Length: 95
Image (cartoon, helix red, strand yellow):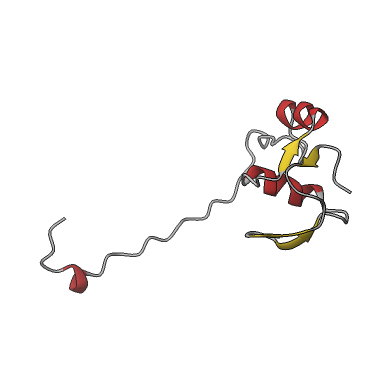
């Protein structure tokens, strides 16, 4: 049983091995998140239904829209560490 937003094309419902999720049995209930991830990754056997096109292409079904924090809110910032190049290994090499 698939979510009403998706339908299988080119295969009969059954077990399929996927690169991202391993074995998925399409004869059983598959979560919306898994189906959406497969579709977004270009899984060739899933197609959006007309209901799915309307819902997924017109609004964000996966979650609420992102909101900006109120002005004056302190948002934590994490500094990304950048490793320095190893001068010994790069000695004498031109860039």
